[in-house]
Length: 374
Image: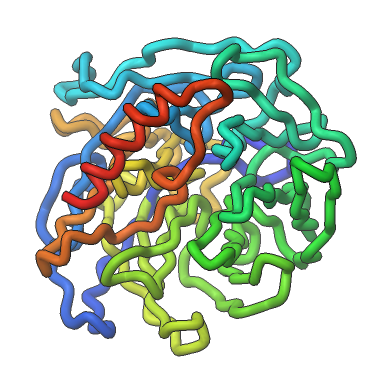
């Protein structure tokens, strides 16, 4: 999470630790790579810096034409889908439009796509809805609970899951049709990012106690396990890693946690992306795009280094400069088996059109499906 009002915690992305693991899919190998992860990246994956420098923004949503959306308080930033700039020797996607949304809470970063075509955010007013056709004003959803503005996501059934972001966080499911807000889980830790899976699973990042919790869609506990690193942004796996969860860790690493079908088996941790000592940006919120890639935020969080990040480091740029600038990094899947599937699960490609935008749906969905089944 980006700078927080909670004492001692901050919000940002990345990690270190070289582990060669033997999991269910065999031995992984590593190669030196650019794209922020300057120590190594697992051969199943690739990484590129997507955008930067950025402000205190949370990854989390997309337009149906494939434009990344981030939220920084009352502004939603829409990024160009084409790399159209250069910074520190790195090809980057610049902001296409900064949408200042009237009535949208300041100081929050959580944002998600609803299955109804709207965007949903969370903050001090609770859950708020934004129409991406008009970009405001924001509508505060009745019955929702005030939040620190971090974790929010969408279930396949269209309901919104979010957390209040406090220590001992409460997790709620909100039905935007009936306006019913239901407390489904009371955690004994701070819930940061929330991710949803294809069967309605809910994964919670235990950012305060280094844990991951998997719930069913009504809050029943499926699996809970401790992690060696502090997870923040999460993603469910897809394709050959359909029984895995990915974590963007506060110490600048990316870890994949492999389990069995049903999430009941032994957890095998595989660090798939590492930064060099002294180069650990703070890993923060994340999202999976319509291109089946994992997009993560990496930040400088100098006031809070207890989770392994390096003060003064946000990004390791392609020209070899490591500095305090923040960025978004794209982690792609190499599909070494030739299965045509992706290593990350995304709900975005199944979404209905934005309100009143059937033409945009046809354009966006066609391109999404083409990329998905490459």
